[in-house]
Figure (cartoon, rainbow, N blue to C red):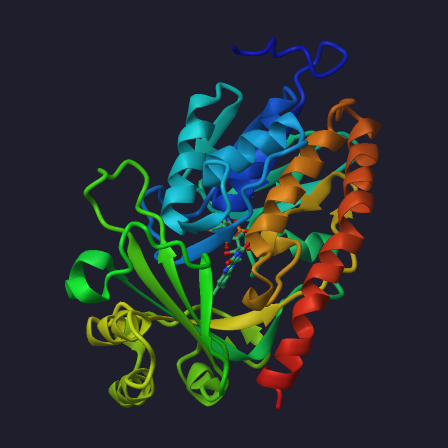
Length: 373
Ligand SMILES: Cc1cc2nc3c(=O)[nH]c(=O)nc-3n(C[C@H](O)[C@H](O)[C@H](O)COP(=O)(O)OP(=O)(O)OC[C@H]3O[C@@H](n4cnc5c(N)ncnc54)[C@H](O)[C@@H]3O)c2cc1C
């Protein structure tokens, strides 16, 4: 049922602008809309992007708030599993589109933002100004909004190693290597830890696909010998990560070295790695980390990777982004007009800052020993 738009407080419409319509931005938008806030979410890219990797999603919904249950059901169907990034994104996007309080605008880049005593706003590359009672930065690890919250520490730092991500359809495996539908192994299996962790996973089939369609076999491994390559290709600049490596950018010699390494790994993870190397669908992600000192400045706040970037070994980045959204929803319950916005976001920071700092720090031991040996 659609809620009354004047219900948030004082018969005025409460409004928020969110920069970034990826997983964190969509979850934050849905959580705010649950509290009657009218949300505009903008993203610089179009809506038909695809992400190939799998995310470990905490599904347990027992004893949780309505918003947490809603988000967990959307992202995981209520069970802990490995879900394809694109499946999670498409379910969240569909939910956001269904919600009359959410205005989703793709192909809209934020070029400037600021705040005063009454509002916060963004200016887009189309020259439009979008104002809100609050502004949420969900713009990822290279966040521009972060510069307004922590100008003394605006960048995530390269951790000295990278993750290679490979996947293939189960159908492309010989039948005897397929895990089978009674597979009940761990959601993510560490199959080797010598010279960097290596993980295999069976990733749930894409949302909307038929029962006969296949799952994907994922293989991810860490590599601390490519810092020179990453810097040569512009993927890492000093200690700042600029972009990931696509298969087409990876030099032939590197692919050959990776294939040689993978040829010793157990099946089906070996096949997934070799398939991605041969088809150049392999993706290389330089690992970065960000321990926040602040999450909020006035009526501007950060969520997701803009707020905190943990090493993937924590498997917590996405799950904590969901908790950011839940906390944000809880904190705006009493309204966000005028000074209420400042109080609501200060409460958000007090609920989240220590938790997310601990979460990032929990992955730093591994990064310090493996990434900077
Ligand atoms: C290798 C790897 C494995 C991982 N595995 C796990 C796991 O198993 N479990 C887990 O919980 N987490 C995992 N994570 C972390 C997880 O993927 C992220 O924490 C999560 O997806 C949150 O992303 P986000 O929405 O905050 O940022 P992003 O997905 O980076 O989204 C940022 C969005 O902002 C937009 N944007 C940026 N700048 C602008 C601008 N100026 N104007 C408009 N739009 C803008 C971008 O286009 C983008 O859509 C993993 C991460 C990595 C790298």
